[in-house]
Structure formats: structure tokens, C-alpha cells
Image (cartoon, rainbow, N blue to C red; front, side, top):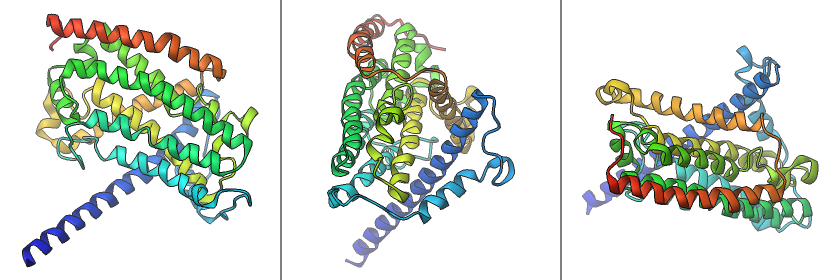
Amino acid sequence: MILSINIVENDIFNMLLIAAIYLGIFSVAGLFLVLLERKVAAWFQLRLGPNRVGPWGLLQTMADALKLVSKELTGTIKADKFLYNLAPYFVIISSLMALAVFPFTQEFQAFDINIGIFFLIAISSIGVIGILLGGWASNNKFALIGAMRSGVQTISYELSVGLSLVTMVLLTGTLQLSEIIEVQKSGWLIVQGHIPAIIAFMIYMIAGTAETNRAPFDMVEAESELGAGFHTEYSGMKFAYFFLAEFINMFIIAAIGTTVFFGGWLSPFGITESIPWLGIFWFLGKTFALVFLMMWFRWTFPRLRVDQLLTLEWKYLLPLNLLNIVLMALIVWLGLTIQI
């Protein structure tokens, strides 16, 4: 009896420790991505960017976070208080849950489940519930329109994200993220899969950017039309949860791309297999390269109209995705994959 209690206590302690580690990663990654976004924006616009708080402006996002923590939590009298307060937690928790299944290194992964890809696709759909709740509960027409746009956009582009990943699952024969990385010891999947893999990656990045509601697909919070969109009525830390979740979701999209297309933590010449802890640097390096690509989209292309956004998905990306799956199936069936 005493032994079983000790085992339960150890399990609870381990789970709390894992949760604390991932919460720390979540917070630091979010703050760093906000700073990176501002620096990248400044670079594209020939500005200096944040350069006042701390050396080279590195403490600017920390100062912004302290400002948000100290702000008063305001709301509207007509808001549905329960749903209004609940909505930000849906968004932030779904992002945190997705981080738990990524193999950052060979030995650093919270949960190695055999349906990893399916889990990520499913969990990414939970965040939109929080957005819809926030828009509805705010009792504000601009917030509601932004939330409805988010629902339509996420559901539409989730199809292309899922189908592009299914294309690569045909190549690997597994949904488990750690096994997908193991398959790539003979070469990145974007190379093994020929042209269909390259097409799948391009579709994935476009659809992933749209799913995170980032420019040029940011109709959800189009400032010229909707103010701040679905979080117009939020302030303080509740606003910060929505804001932080957007950047973490961008990191998640990039991390999935790194894992499925670019070998995850694997490095050339087997360095990370002999020195496992170096894998996290390879993983993060590839991930932040894809994050930079998504930021490049934002500061290069103009915002699409709603009809253009949906036309791109339903008339172009989705049919191309279905055709691409057939091509990948033929390549796998004929044994034409490239091994390096």
C-alpha cells in the first residue's frame, strides 16, 4: 500500500515537473518570438526596432510583459462573464498541449504517442473554440465578426494542413513523430518524396500561416475593419494570452514542419546521435528558420480579402492537395523514393 502511494506521488511529481518545464519553454519562446517579430519587421522596413530597454533592446518584451501584468482587467457590462473569462484559457492550453508531443531531441519529449500527427491536428482545432467563445461572449459586433472569420478560416485551412501531413504519412507509414524522425536518417522527407513532398511543404506553409491568422491571412483582426478583432474587449493578461498564443501557434506550425519535412533534431554526419543534447539546437535552428519565413510572408504580402482567402483554399490548395496525395501514393507504390 505504501509502495503504491509512493509510486502515485512520484508520478504526480514528475507530471508537475514536466508541466513546469514546458510552461517555462512556452513563456520564454513566446517572449523571444515577439522580440524576433519586431526585429524582423524593423529589418524589412529599414528601421532599428527595439533598442532602448536592455542591451540591443533584448529586454523590451520583458518590459512589455510586465506592463501587461500590471494593467487592470477591464471588460464590458453586457459581456457573458463566464465565457468571457474562460475563452483565453482555451486558446493558451491548446497551444501548451501541442508542445508536449514534440521530440526536441532524442531524449527530450514529454509524450511520445503513436498518433502524434493526428493529435496535433486535433488539438490545433481546440484554440478556435476559445476565439469563438471570446468573440461571442464580448457582446461586441466587431469581436463577433472577427471570431466568425476565425472559425471559417481555421476550419477551411485545417483541411490543407491535414492533407499535406497525410501526404508525408504515406511516405513514412507512421503517425508517431519520433518514428518520422527516425525514417529521415536516410534523408529529409522533403528530399525522399520528390516533387510531391516539395508541393506538400509549400501548401503546408501557406495553409499553416493562414491557420494561425497571420498576415496576409489576418482577416480575423483586420485593424482597418474590426479594431482588434475577436479580442477587442480584452485587456491585461487575458489579452496577453491571446497575443502569446498566436506566436506559440506559429512556433508549433514551424516545429511540425521541421519534424515532418526537415528531419527534426537530426544533424549531418550523425552528430546529434552521438551527442544527443545538441539535437535541441538543430531542432530550434530549423524551426526558427521556418518562423522567419512566416514573418517574411507578413511583411511582404498585402492582406487578402475574405473571398480571395476562401477561393485560394477551396479552388486551388484543396484540389492540388488531393492530386498531390495520389502522386505521393504512386511514388511510394513504385518504390521511387530517394535515399541518401
